[in-house]
Length: 233
Image (cartoon, rainbow, N blue to C red; front, side):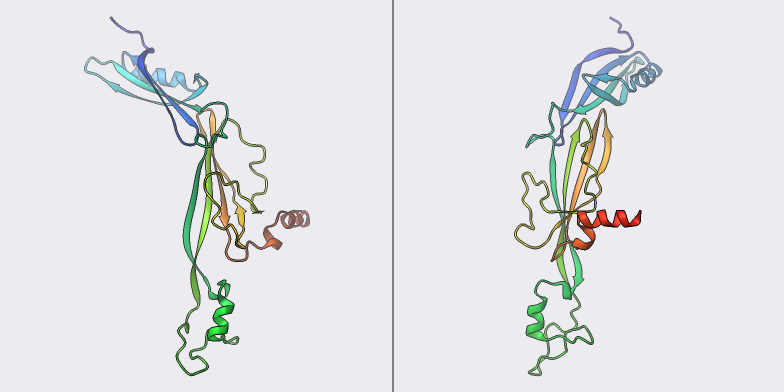
């Protein structure tokens, strides 16, 4: 029994990833490679079960027939607010070197070991003449962090671009906990990253943790940025 070009074969596959992106694959019969190429191009901008066609691949057999796989993508379900499907959270930690003067323990170190204000350095010796254990120290290691959310949505949120580059007092943590809870560090909302996935959008939003003392309010607060924009105009 011969099949017509474009005949849909059994064996449809579906998957849903952690961001809420649903992928659908259909197997399609073609009698030649050229027919498979033409069929794939004809499927561009077409949808199946509300999922947009995103690409194809095919494999031929000894008889010259080709079985193509047509791939489609869409947002799974009606909502992206599920605790388990539709959102991936990450805390991306890293270490950085900072001037020792910015250490939260700097005042205690000065009390214990002294500080040469002219040289802006710890003195070589302690008052009793013994060698200072912190002499030559100019910086210290501290951790920083980026909190990241990745999700797939059918439409871009209207407030996605609001407050970019401003201090956010309470990032929208879901399952993860704020590592800066209880101290004086603050978060800065970074520019989002957006990519299209089928008929959906994949959004990556990030918030960067400050050092000790928080981001400078005079520069990064929403009110300060509004003043700077008005002044520039």
